Image (cartoon, rainbow, N blue to C red; front, side, top):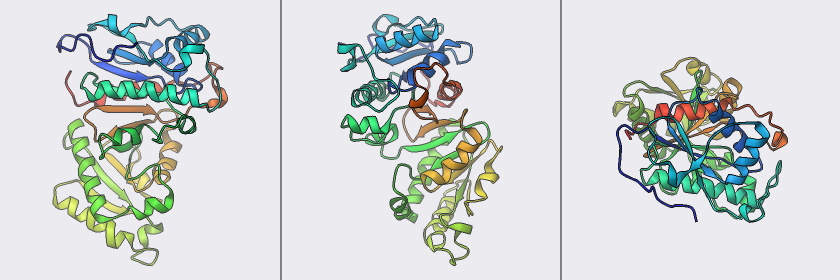
Length: 342
């Protein structure tokens, strides 16, 4: 059985921070981009990187890619004072047959990817990791495995209901008020009370990262931000009152801005974050600007969680052609944004 707890939990100020990495869906490009990112070594900050996954999956990928990465067992790793890599091997049904299905959704792969992530999240919740980086999973594979959550953020929200999905790049930053919901449900949730609570959590989260640095620009819900009520009343009835109250509390926040211009106002402005009111409103703009370099960040947690902003890319899984750029950025950002000393 895999170890469940850090064998040496005492803090050592001279040791490097621990960053956990769940390797994602074994049938996608997660294991590949993880090994490529860490194989660069100089491209990522010095840390003790703990991979949560299956050894046989990673050994297959290492051989196929020609990556030389020494993965010692986690139980033997101790506290690292120079960059090191260890494997927290997670028991899943895949190990029994030592086989995986590449390039397609699979219940067995979905269960494996969930168990990898669950172990990493449990260790982070115990305060034993500074941050976790999650390689891409398949929502369909999780569904085939009977996993009740749609993704990483929804699982974490079960422990931290105020978890916020945000997207980060050098050119643009976006925070999502809602994410994996139907458009009808997302619109229904735009209320002044819930928006006000969201603004407060977002503010507290970024204040832990860089106090006094960030300003929020809120998108409207309707075309032209409602055009003074001609195209919808949500701006006047719900969004503007929530923004006014947040400003009275000292937040640097403005809007609502027409959704077709708000992203231009934050583009190449490192201290500005666009607040999008539903998933695609924010991600269409973000992925046009930073598809290969953007990072998915979970805020509102006692630790930082990041992920590349692309999916499993089943169509190229196993070919060795996946670009690891977004995974590298996710690892760098996890180290940079973590507010916790270790």
